[in-house]
Length: 323
Ligand code: NAP
View 1 (cartoon, rainbow, N blue to C red):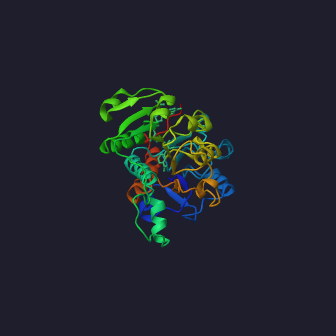
View 2: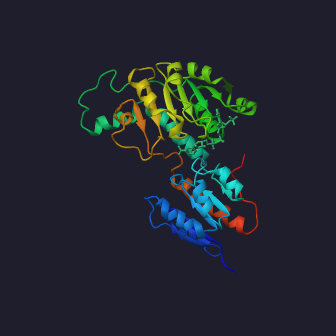
View 3: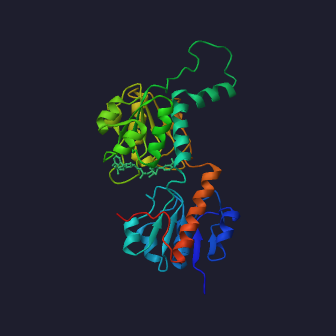
């Protein structure tokens, strides 16, 4: 029997892929660091039974339309805003993502971003490495406290809850906003539900952890930044497009808010000349929320396991619901 043909859009470590080669005919893009060219991907998709994609790939209606044999797309991320899920559903193509395995790792990074922005860690590191540390003064690199402050989590899902858990360890007061209340999470993390506006006006740290959808695109804009405290710090661990970056820049330079910690940007990779990167009160990271070696291996394995299970007639472990 011919094995299903699987195309992976990056070169993944062979020790992850090897166990699956027995039952799957696996080919990979030649590069680890450079995304597959879209035209090349379209060509590969025509003959593929399964694809492993990254968030850098746009799996759109046009690509799915050409992929006559395609049965499954396994996305190496929990977010799947790069995939036209409805178009996949119309063609009966299964989509999977990688929830849970990255939750704690991402929460660690986002909490690190809170600390780094509040306590000016990257700015202080630049200062010392550039040889500027010549004296001590009482307010040298003085930041703002995290402990006992109010954290407002917008998107209290899997990752948001684990950020809340870490915040409780810092004796923070936790507010959250979702479209629906989560009373179990309120009990578990001693968190209080707030309307979006209420959270914006009360939180010292506003953390965006929602998925990118039509509803959340641009939800942080000049109106929302204006409602925040001028001492507040905005953290984005979700997707860059949830923020109008020009409005964030204006809010920072006019001191409507005090700082921002950003792991994600509207355009990635962001240009080094981007105005946000010129500000000391911005801590910027290259979308590394889930980037620990342990977790990235688990994510890669989960993608392949989902594909393997699919072709063996078993249910996939982490389906994207086609709502
Ligand atoms: P999740 O469990 O689905 O949580 C998402 C939360 O957002 C849910 O609580 C949901 O609650 C809420 N939400 C959705 N739409 C909303 C809206 N319009 N207004 C307010 N709240 C809304 O997802 P997760 O696993 O925590 O991941 C969340 C997102 O983080 C992913 O989609 C991805 O974009 C991002 N992420 C980034 C990285 C990184 O490297 N920076 C790593 C992993 C994930 P309701 O449905 O009740 O509204």
